Amino acid sequence: MPLAGLVLLIGLPPVASVLGETFYIGLFSRVLIYALAAVSLDLILGFGGMVSFGHAAFFGAGAYVVGILAFHGMEESAFISWPFVLMGTDNALISWPLAILTSAGLALLIGAISLRTSGVYFIMITLAFAQMIYFFFTSLEKYGGDDGLSLFARSRIGGLDLNNDATFYYLCLGLLIGFILLSYRLVNSRFGMVIRGSRENETRMGSLGFPTYRYKLVCFVIAGAGAGLSGALIANQTEFVSPSLMHWTVSGEILVMVILGGVGTLLGPVFGAAALLLLEEFLSLYTEHWMLVLGPILIFVILFARRGLYGSIVERIAQNG
Amino acid sequence: MYFLLFCQQFLNGLQFGVMLFLMASGLTLVFGIMNLINLAHGSLFMVGAYLCATVFQKTGSFLLGLLVALPGAALVGIVVEAVALRKLYTRDHLDQVLATFGLILFFNELTKIVWGPRALFLDVPEALSGTIEIIPGAPYPAFRLAIIAVGIIVAIFLYLMITRTRLGMLIRASATNREIIGALGVNVKLLYTLVFGLGALLAGLAGAMAGPLVSVEVGMGEDILILTFVVIVIGGIGSIRGALVGAILVGLIDTLGRAFLPSFFKLFIDPATADGVGASLASMAIYILMTIILAWRPRGLLPAHG
Image (cartoon, rainbow over all chains, first blue to last red; front, side):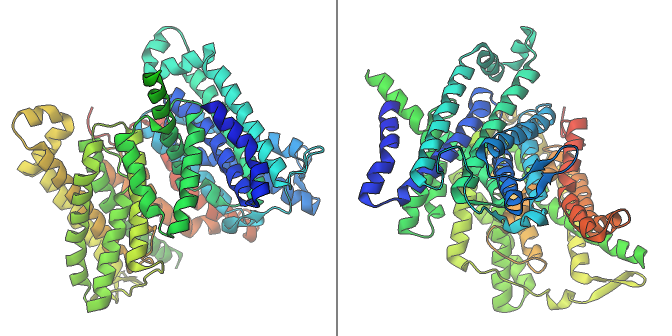
């Protein structure tokens, strides 16, 4: 099943080019990028039991790092001039790792405070932090404020031409697969066992001698870093960054992708991202009021199909075989 | 002069706080009793605003608008509770957040279909369009004063209802232990629907009164929804007293911050930067407040029980 999906994804760009429907390459790049964000959220949500309602903050921060560095690269001015000089750049090998680091740092800060709370309070405090960051970026007049910032071109990365949609698509696919493999190793390692253990019973894990707070914080930071990478990619895909990337409804949408696909699985969020974005695209062909349909579908899935798309498929296969 | 300006902004903050309290009291009751996070509470605010605005524009009577908006919002709330939310009471918070997120999408789109994408702008009702000098030298809009008065009346009404009536007793009891209350023969289902309807009515009231102050548009419920969550988290989830304290605190800090932080920073740095820094800090202020309070008291200022 996952293999068939992979073959489909690899085969998509040439097929779309032959059929003259290159629009789909862009659409599926978006699917892959949001899938990366959703997988990173599922690390803390599905495996760590931490319901974060502020994941868009890391997503948007990553995008802004790429956007702002590109802006200074155009102006040939320095982004930071003290204590060290950081010139603006459109080199992906500099700006993307910085996007990941920035989001990870932000996650460290937010996680360190938020993880002191739990339950509803955790949901709300992550939401509050994301709002804070949202308003911070809306007030950055220099970088467009509310209106956001257009990129002159996509990032440069060695010999690859990212302005070619197919090349960019394969890069997104590669990074997504890389992140899923990394996450797979992670959740099945000793570290992952501790994280999953504290989802089930944190007190017990604590009694066994595991400093659960630290484990959860590290997991939160890794998830933030993943979202930062997907943010760097979305900035390149749309060649535009704005605060709307970190609006709270985006956090909601990423959550929806995870749940729709199947929480606590690594491939589920990919299915969820594809389902949500394709459904949006498909419904909007027929009616501009597609949200009127999407809302009830969402409620229906949550009420009646709790395992999500991928979860249901896996279950079906397990029953038949 | 500066003092009078401060008084005016203080009253503005109070009025905003009252608005937040009307929203927060319903949301915190629903959470405290049914253990339900309802993101669609903001949609009820929007429904109230649209109903009142439409009737007000058609008939010219704001009072008539209120008379339609309040039962209208309560009815929508009761229907939503019976159709969708009732099944969510026993689910975890994540499911509730997502399902009610779906409701928001639905309501926003439905509103867009019924009323169109353009915002409605309302005048302040004639009878309250003047100003009153409650502080000598500082005329203050009568409509905003009326909102503050309504808020005080609602707060007293809720206090008396919760502490002095049989309904209030049942509400308190079911917040403590719903199984026992059900076993004692109380119709818990009906009680929940009533509480939800009451919350919806208060949200509708807030929306209706907000109409002449802000533009009535799709999505207007979401901004105030997030602030309302900040309020109930600061106050302690499930606590009406907490909601009141939190609402006034958030209303004042937000309004005073927006009014005075930019000029405060001008004392130290150049005006252009000060405007930017002040404005961004002002919009972040309440979230910073919430973070500090949660780090200090993880269950809010006045937790409901335990």
